[in-house]
Amino acid sequence: MKKSELIDGHIETITNKNLTWIDVMKPNRDKINILAQKYPFHELNLEDCLSKIQIPKIDKYQDHMFVILHFPTTKKGDNIPRFSQLSIFIGLNYLVTVHQGDLKPLTEVFLMCVNYENQKEAFMDKSSGHLLYNIIDTLVDDLFNTLIKVVGDLHDIEDDVFNPKLAIAKEISLIRREITALRRIIIPLRRIIMYITSDIQKFSEHDLTLYFDNVKDHIDKVLEALEESKETIEIYKDTDYMLSTEKTNKILAILTIFFTLSIPSTIIGTLYGMNVNLPGGIGTGSWYLFGPYTTFLLLLMISLTGVLLMAWYFHRLGWIRVK
Image (cartoon, rainbow, N blue to C red; front, side):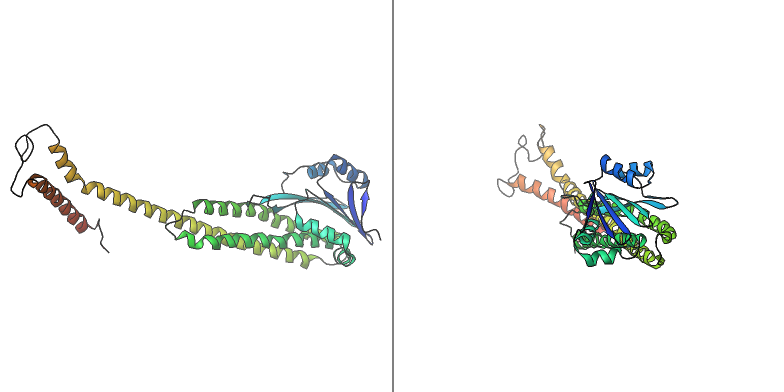
């Protein structure tokens, strides 16, 4: 049994009863021209299908509707989600999807309908509106996999934030970038789904309101989780900044104290390094009260006395704390 057909050898299509699903992967001018010959699509909408940077939108016509949606996709070697454009034409007895082929859930659904009769019946048995719901619902459910990854990354760095030996500013910035990218995709998606819900009924004999409300509910849950993740990562960012600042201040405080305590020794050493006569110096002769090293010992005692007095005074002011 022939499970799928090719239109002019270029575009694969599936037919079940009166419903046809045409999937155009990696569109080019030839494939778009085939669609233009087969269906009365507006030329501007067909041009939008060739572009990869169109904003999400919905255009309504008397006998069909054109929708552009964005869904996240991740390139190999890149953990930051990018948006992939999905263009959809929906009419009473047909559905056309145009994409670059990097939306794996959509590709898998199409292949299942091609290879398994029961899956084709499940997805395409009712109407084009119900088929559109099944496609969008599959892609929206895949958002939870991306969300799980984001939440997992947050849990991974939770302990590292409070580890003074680790610097995780880069990891925090990458997660913030990932959350921002997902919000840019999901917020417009929620708006477009609301517009679709209000007009999808003319492409189905069955009431699809509850179905698309369910999709909207899933999107709301994803968006709510992203908002919580955004607040969490902002807290981690502030915490990491405060701890890093405190660590830097402690280091500077210790270095400043060491430098300050060395001032008495530096002053005395500088004085006795000058070419002038000083008590106990070379010009006046060394002291021998405690032997040949009397001058060195006395100078060392004077320096230590100054250091101890300064340390005592700093401790009294609370600048040096002994735990």
